[in-house]
Amino acid sequence: MTSMDKMGMIIAVAIVVAAVGFTMTGGSGAPSDIPVVVAPVMEQAKDIKKDIEPAIEKIKEVAKESKEVLEKTKATTEKGMKMAEELASAKASVRLVSIPEGTSVPGCEKNDLCYDPPHVIVFEDAEVTWKNDDTAAHTVTSGTASGGPDGKFDSSLMVSGSTFSQKFEEKGKYPYFCMVHP
Image (cartoon, rainbow, N blue to C red; front, side, top):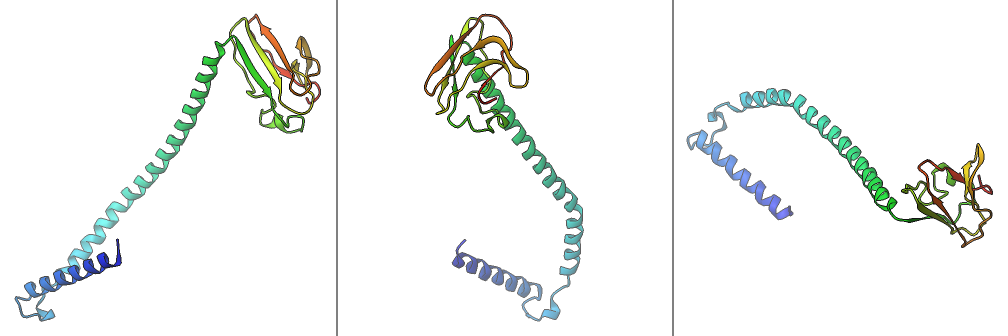
């Protein structure tokens, strides 16, 4: 709203107030002739305000809770969409997993970023291919860093740019890690 609009509104209100005062005094314009009706109306307004304040607080509380629910729903939906994409791509006969640049530096395991994607779902008889996109050499070795290799597969040392593929013919979970950077 511009200052001209505000000024116009102030003038209009002043004119209305003057007209009401003039009308209420019967045209004499003497303030003592104006009936005292403002005070009871103000008291009623205070009572109404007391009555609606709890409702206003409840509305604010519900709005905050609604926002939280909306954020949780959004996060759950995004997670579900990611899972749906993963399942849709699981039907592919070959899946590619990257060993990203910088994974030779400790810390990628904290955010599960040592392999991209960190988890792969495939159907039976599908093949997973790992590509070393890092400048350092890595391995793709079945097993866990804490338990060691389990002997199911091992890429041996993969230099930068090289790949390793493994076909999975049986259902199961196949954890893997890098022997050089566990």
